[in-house]
Amino acid sequence: MGAGWRWEVFLERTPFGEGTYLGWFVSGLGVTLALSIAAWTIALALGTALGVLRTVPSRAARAVGAAYVDVFRNVPLLVQLFIWYFVVPEVVPPALGAWLKGLHPATLMFVSSAACLGTFTAARICEQVRAGIEALGRGQRAAALALGLTLPQAYRHVLLPMAFRIIVPPLTSEMVNLVKNSAVASTVGLLELAAMARQLVDFTALPYESFVAVTLAYVAVNLLVIAAMRVVEARARVPGFIGGGR
Amino acid sequence: MAYDYDWSSIPGALPFLWTGMKVTLRITATAVLAGIALGTLLAAMRLSRSRLLSSASAAYVNTFRAIPLVMVLLWFFLVVPALLERLFSIPRHEDTRLTSSLVAFSLFQAAYYAEIIRAGIQAVPSGQLAAALALGMTAAKAMRLVVLPQAFRKMTPLLLTQSVILFQDTSLVYVASVADFLYVAYQVGQRDARLVELLLFAGAVYLAVSWVASRVVQRWQERLAT
Image 1 (cartoon, rainbow over the protein chains, first blue to last red):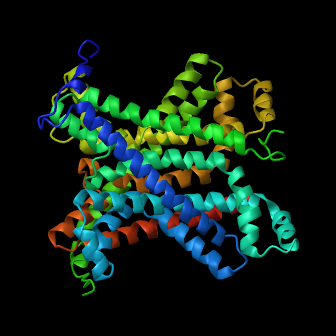
Image 2: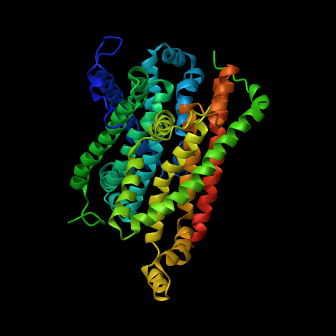
Image 3: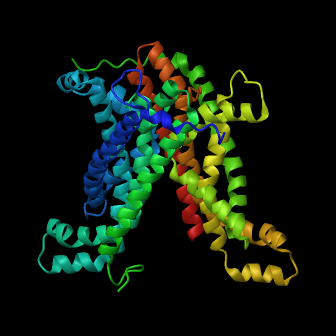
């Protein structure tokens, strides 16, 4: 190795003539980013709703939240993805199933993967949101209710804004995990970054260059996420909590 | 027309599914044992006074934790065998995929165990180490006889939780077509055109095993806490 690197291969044209291998790499990176953003949106919305469910006074609501977390945490991500991709289009109401199966194959792969990663990550975000709300203690909730806020208002104006400011660091790890987990989408054929690594090896016969480039791309994306979230963390810091600064 | 479930292909496929489960369990067990052994070594290196050892361990842990497991597996399946072949001129075996996955999971898992073990060691009161050293033990002996036994007692629940995650993650050997439980279930589903039922069955089995294991760990943790 060493002397044998051929990085210039990325500037060569692919056999299909539609662009360079670098173009493939960039499109894979684009799909990974789009998938991560779509899944994060689902995860944050659903995870917040579930986190609220797990902390409301109703015992039934709390049980629903707990059951969701138990199921989505104890089934492997790959099995969940296969269920979203192979099982869901078959077992949903026929009209919806027909619509899903009529989608462009790449679109169905993307939609299934985003739904899978979103619902999987939601279980983890749910636990973080719950931990954040519980970290506030009973005082905040009691004070909000005593001021005459309804329970939904207390969540919207007091509990959730505070909880989110506390849980920025664990949310950052979940974001990094999500980007890493998005690589499983390659197993259903979505041409994201990890799938592109294999395709680059197949076409260029240069495994080291292809794999090093893709691996570094994942590391780079995650370093960017961490750097961006540091800024958010610094701005969102709550005075009076450990690590909260002034 | 709603989907017509037909579970009849599962009973006959159970022996076949069991061979897959044995592969899954074998990968899990190997990675747990090798991972904890290597993870302990990495944690000890990380906490050692030598700058070189400590940064080498940090680099190892951070590298593995920064890369998606799928990419780690692809590295091991596609690149490492070829590299070994070139470096040591080992003739290409008929099938190195299972070996590659055992090695990949052990090395990957070690990075995650190392962080748990490091935290566990750091949670042992420093007076324990000081007392052991004052009694005339060498640092290695103090670690082995005094610090590690206490640390492992505290971190066993976390190590087991991580192992349940590992049990689920082994399904990713699918990328190398290693015939683990999920892969066999998938194959049976394809063969009988009953992919829906087989995948739901596989999900239910993983759910049952992981759920029971997590509950046991939780109980254990509660007992340690009191």
